[in-house]
Image (cartoon, rainbow, N blue to C red; front, side):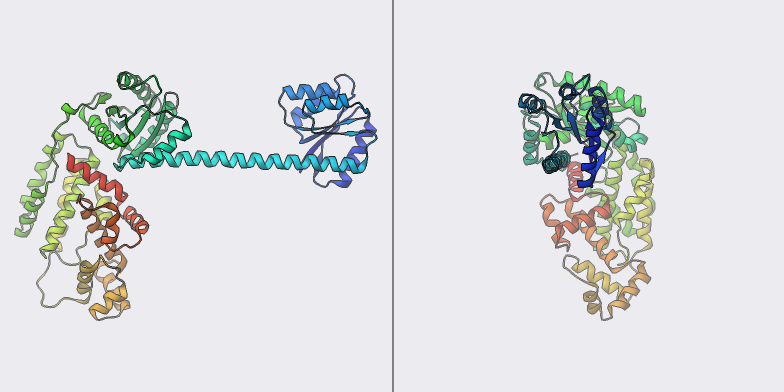
Length: 523
């Protein structure tokens, strides 16, 4: 549909043009005609027609003068000059002022229709071009978001993606002279859940100062800062101090959250951002000051909460039935946690990792019933409900007590369902199916499926998934095993499907958990 305005000081001429438009163009909305230049300007400004058919010679402000005024106002309308003069100098002036075409009085019907069609085609082409430009702009914006997300994900995984970063620099026309990484945490742990809102405030403020990328990960807000040419290694600390003051003030004003920031050392090479990640995290946990810069000599030497030797001690106590001793040993860990300034989320992850180790040791020694499966998803849910370190340790004790209830009982013969689970434990790395397992134990797949559900309230797929995810987590703690090989080693031939199942069952990506275990080892 095209909106058309007719401007002519002769009402009969307006009516004639209206009749031709109605007779030959069904997709035209004809606006009320105007009879002078002043009304023409007003109507075009208010009604915003697509096409205006304008008589050059009108009283007051002429059509030519009106056209010049509208050009100054940058109004988007296609002007068709309608004149009784064969004076091409006036027509040329109109074309210079932006007129799309002209027709001569008396109006020739065929030429008029041809002119209208041609101008409509121009409008369609421009609309199509505008739409393509709009789509292109949206795609570029989305692509920029994807690239920025990829940059931050690669930094957090400890493998900075230089290719994506170079593409970002090219698109943003930035000459890279160095950058730094900042880790920001809420001073009060209860405020950690609102970090997404804090991130939006930070992004809005950072736009005024520099180029950046941000991401919230494990209750820490990270932002990678690329300052302008006035900031370098010599003066970046002063620049960060001032920037942090601004961010701290804005966050408090809008969300009433106190934040503190840990800043990495200046990095001239983007590939060193993996180091910057660790430095910023160390810095933010070293001091209660609102800004702490990473200083190599000031790093607190902190041991893991649950070293391998401790897991072995607890496993031995479990075999001896010394639950009170286990409880006492775990309660003693609270003092170590307080001295080490651990974040609650880190304590949760350490506790889960410790429980996996205990489970594995007891399982390998055949201390546990085959149906005592370790569900990472269930344990994680229980740990997240804990509000402090004491509750986390108490929950750890409760899980070990659950293990005690599922110790292996002496029996001469194993049941079908036990044989099935044992077969899955021994063959999880292969592409096994319910039919294969049922055939191995000597019953139908339908009967085995029912037995598993009755005995363990779990399906075949759920049990096999728990086994595979548990083994994958254990492999992630081994430096010599590459991430891309783990899926195949635990029975998933499709890496993408493995990543999806792992994230669904653990709440973390494979890369995020690997990075977490690497960080624990360094600590």
